[in-house]
Length: 421
Image (tube, rainbow, N blue to C red; front, side):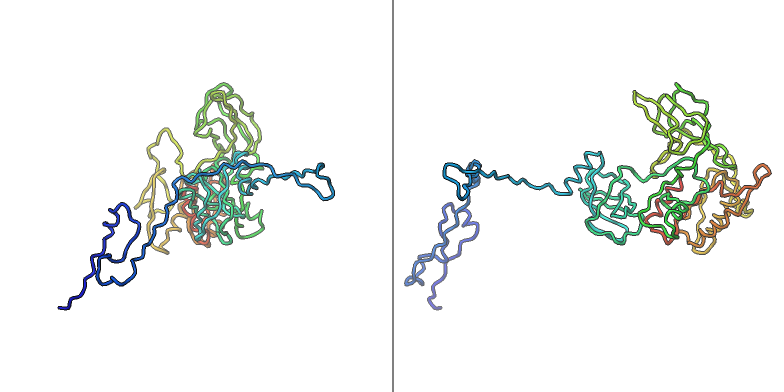
């Protein structure tokens, strides 16, 4: 075997860490006989570590020296004041500050768009299922998810044209419906917008994006008759304080106090004609006075409170003998009609709405074909029922919620909640 010199073992990382004073790192050991004639091993100096707490020099800001103008003597110098330029407030900060001064929630901005689902940022403080207006067209949307300062919004209208950075206005209220006189003989979409009023206002057969009309007519007057309650009586939510004549089939539309209100009556309107938004009742509770009208708003996802649930003891006459004999049902009950496409589910539901012995009909066309809803709108005004020997159109007891298949899919769930109320 040749007498070859062997290299020494290189130090490991652990050995280097354990050594306290390391000033250089040599490639090989200096005792190697192979490199006796070579120069000394090179040393690699380690960089100096910066100080942990850098010292800041306290430099006091001094005003700039006076500037001497040309032609002026050294003794007489005109001082030119130098204005200090502060940071300019941003436009968004000014808008947020003005909104906070007015008591409104600050607006957010669109972060991303994916079909009817929009993610908005700067939405701190937003609540689940809060109603928002998206974009410059004020599209109706509802918050369905919250993560940090971002909120996922389900828009109930077409989102074409919405871009990143568009404003998102917060309402501070959940999606709600209006309850009061004028619901009968009215056709709404899935979020309780009157289709007839939209057609007259826009002169179009389509629903314009971002249109906002009240569900109940604010101009029509109703004949209000106060009940047995008078000034000084205690009243709580759900109590009837008057009635309204709506039509010949609904002669007594009871006016209720909102479920979350209570107090002592301080003023009640006399018998006369009033609009749905005129204040006809004033109550006081703990020194705070509140006024109420014939209508009030209620969130669609919150069930209406009730003191007692009555047992079902009256049969529901559908109007078709095969259903009444083989599948009897009761008023106040629940009936399901399963079936595939084209089996006649819509025909049975229309027959139930036309010929049943119900007092009030709320027909919700959730995802129905447009021609089927058009057929309902054409047939219902022509159908009549006998009331005290007089024929009356069944539209007087019917409210239609038309959310057809060509309308936004996101509004179908909302249309079901709207129909319940």
